Figure 1 (cartoon, rainbow, N blue to C red):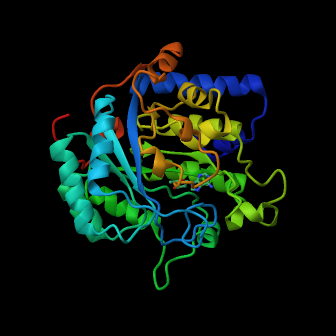
Figure 2 (cartoon, rainbow, N blue to C red; figure 1 turned 30 degrees about the horizontal axis):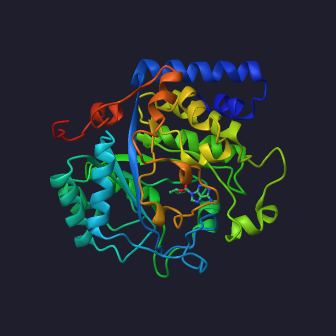
Length: 357
Ligand code: 5AD
């Protein structure tokens, strides 16, 4: 798919033609990664953050939230709960929290591997190569780090670097690949200041990076952040600015599937937040094959407010009350068993041999 075609789809508004895009994406998803939907238990284990990202509600200078860091025992208990629910992977996510030391994290990864035995995905922001190496050696399987936007000027404007540092996510993505991680990245859709041309290049970037996992969700304004407070100031003129809408999110998910057919692609919580009724399902019907149910203990979950009204606040952790299986059933999908590694990772050149599933 060339640049002009990507751009044409992003600008397409005709419902019938869009129906064709959804169908193409769904067929591609079925052919390459099948009908199973893999579940990843998301554990948001610390909301401390050293960064000042202009869109994010847990940015360092947001004083209005209660900061927490779960203990290792609490994280292991949440991981066990996810495993008991049948999830083959836990995602350990936090702010960029340098209170999480290399050694603490290493020991936590080892414990989860030994005591629970699930695949581990890390999502801890921009960390040093030494940290990433240690955690990989301790048993971490995958790492998520969205590049958010490939427009450097926009990126730098909304991600002030830590003093003296430089924010270089593409370099870190390269490191992760070299270290043998399954690598995930993705796009924040509709950032004030993001143009259609930018988004087109973002989608090309998904190909260039040869990503194993691709997570894309809509920007949701948080009132206590610079971009949330003053969206109008940063938005480009209508017709140039990418809208942060549900439909634009489906377009990006569908295009991501078409350009990276073997990747694992989640139907994200941010999408489910825009359409709480069936956003998750529609994402799965338009290219996605992964869900990330939140398994963070309730008392912490409410404090992990990267944007308001997150859909996962209503996720149930009780297996009986959990309707995931019946909701998937209704759209002709099954729950995947096992780790659900990315087929892209398994087939790409230079990937090290995998431990048994
Ligand atoms: N709206 C939507 N997504 C957000 N993220 C952070 N803040 C917001 C927001 N206001 C996303 C970023 C980040 C991921 C963990 O959460 O894309 O990479």
